[in-house]
Length: 161
Image (cartoon, rainbow, N blue to C red; front, top):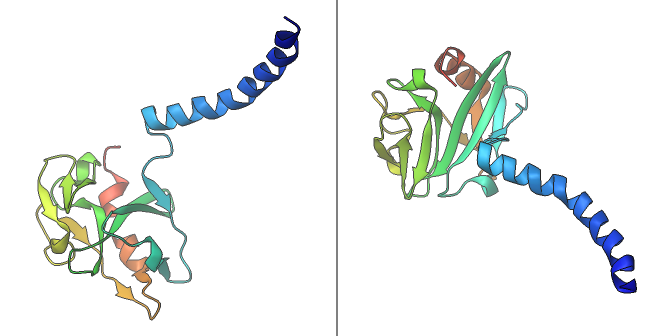
């Protein structure tokens, strides 16, 4: 009994300290708080995505221009080329749903059409992810022009969220 009097207060204190973390993690997972988008900041007239962050698993980013959040993704295609596109297309953008990745394909969350990552930046129009002009620097980092991202604001300013 003496053991419980000594251990119980310490155990309750540990639980009290860990409970907010567990609740926060569960809320993020269940309700999607935090979302899938990592906010990027421009460096002058360029947004830089580090080479180490580019893989065959798409990473989603958000660039804020005034009150508009411009969302895009970067993924390495099967040919090894870095691909970048808005998380929107010319057809379904009004729904504001974007894409998700399933294996080597990006799937439109609105209509369900699949687009192989090899097609990103190669095919435009229709439900294809809207391509972003991109360049690579000597370190392999992906460079996106801020003006190019801002031009994509029209896909997000009035889209449903």
